[in-house]
Length: 380
Image (cartoon, rainbow, N blue to C red):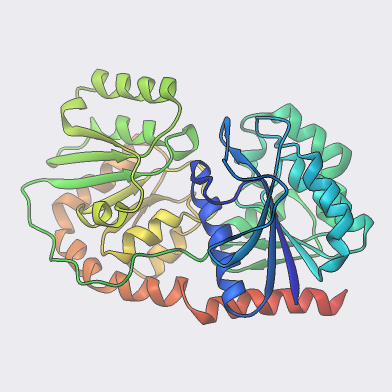
């Protein structure tokens, strides 16, 4: 089975956050399982470009990847070189797996696949929801959807990573099929972390890209209503102007002395996650939420909104709490946890690592993806 993965950005373009890591890990796991995997991507790295030699295949952690130059430096990621290579080679593959939407790499690659009669599976990676459709570059999205996107999606198979994303996609588009399979999440090697120290305050952590969708402003407004002792660490990077606005909110709310702005964390992120009592992710829209699993893998409980794809998973397995995207709901939850559930935080620290390692790593998850590809190829 020969599978071509197409994505506008691939590692080491970690500026794009969780989706970039999830796509790479999927490709690595499939390759390790014996499938023939290639990746077509661009040199995109935010407003900059990766220092990769364009048009030259290179092995990246066991996967054959070709980086093509893009001629637009924005979210469109237009790459004529990638499309030309795709036209010439697409029939070498049994199936094309396209990651994300609303960029010219994804949309035009999908169009080429149908012209060449190669089956397509699309992983929207959170890009097909009411929130995303109506937030940022709305005119561009509507144009793509009307001219080409709607027809392409109707002829594609969909892969989503949570039940929440499945519902969101089904409301927006019609497709040949829709299948839910969780993300792979790269976890730190298993080790025995020391028991968390009991401190006279609740150690809260926000760990994510800092952008409007992540709801950090909601958390900052919630904290002025929190009565239990706490300290918040904010780990992540983002647009400087937006971060400055958030810092102003903290000052105006008189909570800036209870916040540490830690910046970007890379390889040592699991140690940081373990050092806290509670990860708070107040997102407006999150198809999955890798950091939720990363946090639980080291025994740190989570407080997430109902709009995070893993909300049902967290509730069903009693690994944290779910709230609404309002300051009052977030503050009520933090006050309740700090007052009534400190023992639950200790219990979650014990049970969570084993649960999530079983569910989000390993051969069983790999086989689910392989079965999906085989089913689609067999029905074409």
